[in-house]
Amino acid sequence: MGTKNLARTAIEGGRTGSNKWERRDSHNAERASARDYCNKVKLDPEAYEDFDIEEKDHVRKEFNDKLGPMYRWLERQLGRPWDEVHSEVTKTFDTRTTAGRHIVNDHLLSSVEVTEPVYRYYYRHTDDPNTSYSKHDFYVDDNGILCKRKYIPRRYYVRPPPFNTQRIANWLSGRVVGQVGNKFFWFVPADKNKKYGGVTRTWITQWGGERGYYSNRYSLHFYYLHRSPIYKYDEERHIVYQDGKPVIVDYKETWQDSTPTFRQDRKLNDKELAFWNTIPEYYQTKVLERSPTYPEPPKTDYYGYY
Image 1 (cartoon, rainbow, N blue to C red):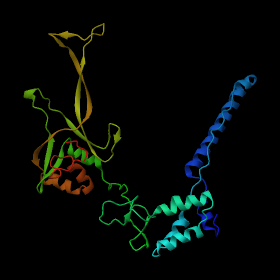
Image 2: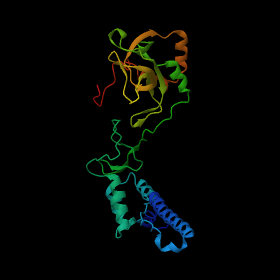
Image 3: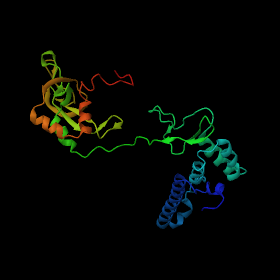
Image 4: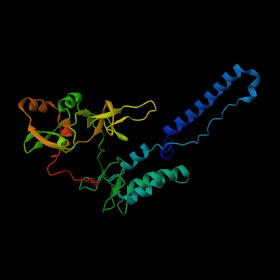
């Protein structure tokens, strides 16, 4: 409800969205309990005193502030001396009430930096200190004039370009592409040599998947074929040994998620290079990031993992 009283208009924002949801949820729970009570009484009318209807949870009122008129009023004062603007604040906004003091002290005055710079929403990736992540960030310059910081939006998530990532995963087939100079090479998993007890593993590549607690749909994952032995058991469910070794009757094959160590292999031929050039740059970078030569020199490790 808009009125000519700006102080009153600025606080009439109604209930907060979360408070509305909590109130509806508490009523839904009470109605569900009442329906459950009626169903039980229908089955056993004589035991109606044995059943109860749960009371709804008490939800406190939480009101939202309608701050648009206040910020528009403040923007109309840009270019004026802050002392004059500050003197008009008490004339325009009624600070005799709790709601009026809340609007003036907690929102209006707190959005204007007068003395020491605080930079609550300071955009720290530029040399200009007068930039902000907030659309309502004001300051007073050295001449005492009310100014507004330049708004710079935050970096929101950008959806990758459309492409069949399964084609890339099938094409890689457990390998990865790396760049050496201006040429592209295959990098293959460096499995241990059989001569020294190693096993040559079968690797595949999958785009996306889960690793631990986190899930990343737009990254490469590598899986190797793990063979688990199935042993022979006797009637008492003990493993049967022969010549001091357990008897293996078969193997169970499963794909295990792992990060291989890569070694450089041959250069991409013309056909492979033609397919590589059809891949969007976003996905090319995702592939190159998994190679040991990306970038050159290596990326700075901010977390101390290596």
